[in-house]
Length: 199
Image 1 (cartoon, rainbow, N blue to C red):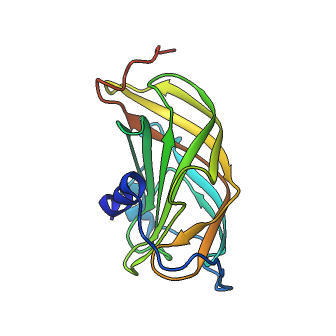
Image 2: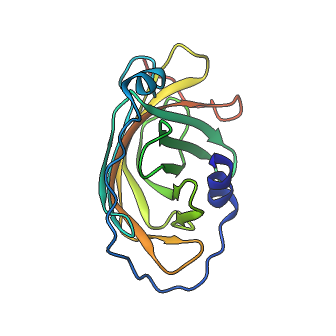
């Protein structure tokens, strides 16, 4: 499913209809399937990864995913230059959500402010995909980086907001992620790792 989301972010997804008609169905915050499963999956080795977000519309929930039980991954992307960061919980969570943030104009080791974000939200196993279909609806307020032990890898922490909804690829409904904040590892390839590293 991460590949599907990446396709939406880089090439754009087609949807049917332009009207946003958010549903009233609420979905509870995701919970780990079990303590043992959650303990086996973690976002950052240091224990300080997370995703928090307020989601409204076709989904209505406060996402508060701690490091334990959250799978996160990040990498640089060449076109447009920036990073792609994804988050999902351990199997058995309900709803089974995948968030993918495509953040423009981010260089290795450098802070950023006011950067555009392309957001995709997938309800895995249902075929329901929501995307902003561009980076004009969401913005990173502030983004900071800290080097990790792995080569060309940084702990990226960011907070931001969306002023417009992510619309359904198939259907008329939408979701609005009004606020979000996260911390995750991001690996930069050699061509992207041109920023000044600060320790």
